[in-house]
Structures are given as structure tokens and as C-alpha cells.
Image 1 (cartoon, one colour):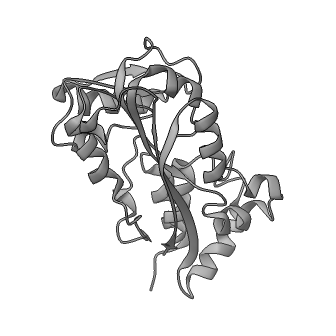
Image 2 (cartoon, rainbow, N blue to C red; image 1 turned 30 degrees about the vertical axis):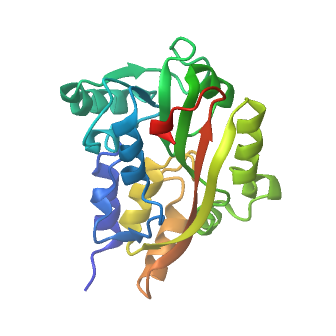
Length: 259
């Protein structure tokens, strides 16, 4: 017999959610990965850079896995628990972690970095990215695409209006990057299957990815969670995430090492 609703809820509510490590979900939820392998591709670019910035690093989990970091590597993060975790992970690697609100301006001089990266930024401030990139520098980012995991969002919030479903459009990102003076050299999108196997996995996910169901709490959504628990006895809850990869260059003499 499976675990009770109350046991699953209590466990998920007690789980720590700082950082960007989803290993708590192992065996409880699965998600396909994009074919382009962001961490590997980002590490390859890091190995060829001389000065790099990781914007919205989370707990530093992706950056700490880079085998060879540039001589100057800086990471920014806004959420205090993540700043603390990123500092613990990254300081031994020589990375400076800067506590910075996710809004302009970035606390760096013009043309400081030849590589700026970001995995799943909440917002991309393209003018600021363009400003801190050196001539010929590269911005490389994996981002959440439109109507991602909306099967789960709409289970709790009901049907979303078209303007909400259209947010995070990759072509809008291209337009914004070009408006900031950058040249988009790669833009790819994929849809990826997600399966949630118990209600605790859903609670943990929504506590961690707080923008999916704004203001989510177990107490506020208790009836829907009970309904979802019963539904999950018949099989996994299936949703689809969208991801896009964007790479853009700053005008100037191109650094062939970053090509």
C-alpha cells in the first residue's frame, strides 16, 4: 500500500528548497533533458574564456561542475539562501559570488566579460547583457520556454489567458537580443516530457519553482492536492516543459576561441 496523503505532504513541506538541485525528486519525478546538453556546452565555452559571468547562478550547482573556469569568474544571485549556498560551493573554486537583485543594472563595468551565461534566468535584461559583454563576446543561455508545465499550472489555476501562455517566446528573445545590439547565432527549442509520481513531488516542485503557481501553499490548495493524490493512484501526472537555447554575440572583432 502506498504512503498516505498526510505523510507525503509532511515530507515535502519539510524538505529544504534552497539552491537549484532537484535530486530530492529522484525516483518521484522524471524530466527529459534537452538534446544540446547545456552544462557540457557551457563548460566548453568556459574553458576558452578569459572572463566569465554566470547570471542568476542559483546555488551554483551548474557552475561548480565546470572542469576549467576562466581566470576571472563571477556569479550573481538574488535569493539570500542561494547566495549562501553558491558562496560555499564556488569560493573554493575562486569564483566571486555577488548578491544582486534580478534587475538592472548589473554591478559591473562596461565590456568586462567575454562570456556571460545563464541557466533558466527569471528575466533576461538584454541591454545589460550587451553592456557588460566585451566586443566579440558571447551570451549563452538555456531558458524556460512558453507555456512550460502548463498542465500542472492550469490544474491549480485553471485555464490561462493567451498573453500568459505566450510568455517566454523564443522569437521574442531573439527580437530583444537584436534590439540590444547583439547578433543571435543559435536559437533552438524543445518540448520535454515530465512525470510526477506522487503528490509530494508536486508540492516540492511548486515550493521550489515559485513562479509556476504564484503564492502556492499546501493550505491554500489542499482540495486540489487531495484530488491530485487520488488521481496519481492511477498513474503519473504528465506535463511538458519547454526549453530554448539562445546564443548571441556582441559586435566587434570576433574572438575565434569563442566561435
